[in-house]
Length: 187
Image (tube, rainbow, N blue to C red; front, side):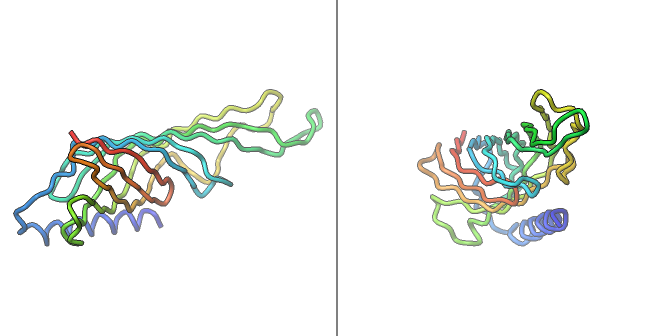
């Protein structure tokens, strides 16, 4: 499902870019560092997990940016296990996940006739999620955490930025896996 949404988003960006190619005024969105905090609510978690996120946007085409990103989140969970030599009980583990990849964003400011203080975008992220799991002492069962997820990281976003001035802005990015609020620094 996420692959279909991501493919549709890319096609929409390509078609919209071609349709708006006649417009001569170009707003620059790149050369921007975005850093924020958020909550991850990935499908395999039983709850939300706090996260830190950063990316650096650069202009690729009119109204389109790419942004290499890194995110870090960690959560604690429990696994009920036991065997004849170990008591059955909930054993805890802490999993740290670091998604790394690239986010492509298409800005709809001109289409929406937005005030220059505001930016609106749709985006898709693609990358890999590196995981580390640490179990509590005394747990001797399987240490593989499947959680229904591979190392591939896909995310679909809708977001906005409010420009405080020409160098600073506040952004809100809502997505299918991690929503963040933070500060944008324009260089």
